[in-house]
Image 1 (cartoon, one colour):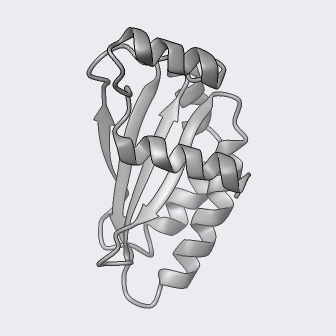
Image 2 (image 1 turned 180 degrees about the horizontal axis):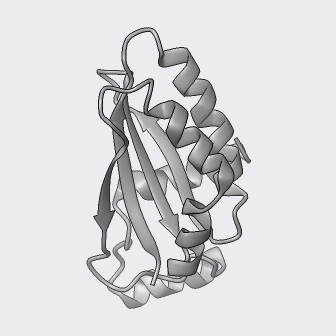
Length: 139
């Protein structure tokens, strides 16, 4: 079963540009991990120094590989000096129903959604972000 979480943190004044640069670098590295499904960083619209990162990994082994990556340790060590909290605040998530195979073709996913009564297994805003990311290509 996929491991899904979100991380939150607040960047301290004067460190916004550095954290944005670090996050862009980390995003490219994490998205290249074989077991990564989603790594989407956001900032709050009203408070641009508040970060929210949605992450999903294929399984426990993929998550273990992610947390043991040397670039993640370097990122977290520097980030701790640039944010209000001691570290990113992690919240683990679980699906309300079994996930649809994210590696399946779009047609197979649509078919699975239709079998489930026509509703998406993801909140509309996440589905929309995924569609935008596909149209825009890699970040």
